Length: 254
Image 1 (tube, rainbow, N blue to C red):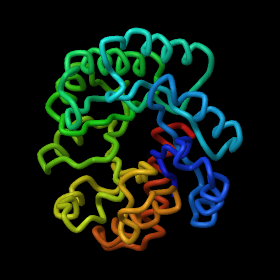
Image 2: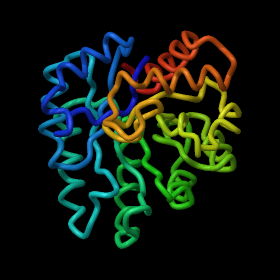
Image 3: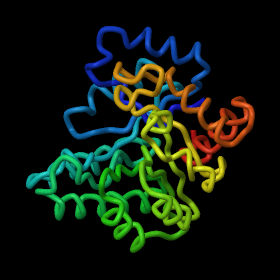
């Protein structure tokens, strides 16, 4: 299994990060991908990657909830980092209209610029699209070609949204603990994506799957997402592990 989206560099894990990673390894997690948030999260993320070479992989990007009137400086920091070294992807980027709609215009500008950067660098994008599928689609529709690849992280959209994503032939859907929630309807239609278009994630420390919902999430819990996918597709969980891991390795070149 590969956890394609985990914020294990956050302070939520400062007291037991080593144990969390050991539990992930023991659970069968072979790699962990870490999306950035903003300039304040970079040092911690880099430190975790340095302490776990070949296991934890950093990405670089500016999260939409960190976008405000001073976004130019944050974008410049992102760009500068890509000139210094290689990252697994451009993320976490996108649009978030759940918390605040004040900076929608700025979020769209930042998203557009980072997608263009990803195309230029030949890297995948990791898209955050909370309550914002129309806005996100407006940008990707304009910029998509087969040189642009990526994943719609933490997919919680409708069946119509899923169909739109699948029209982007080079994109994947990222599924996490939401799939295990009783109030989620993803299990009703996610099979339309086919496993070849799905990667698994935790979004740790958030969106903890059943049976640990309400507690801190961690990479080892990605196995519960795989269990639910195995039930949905009616196949062995080992096949889910292999197919989704192959997808992640192909997408992120890790």
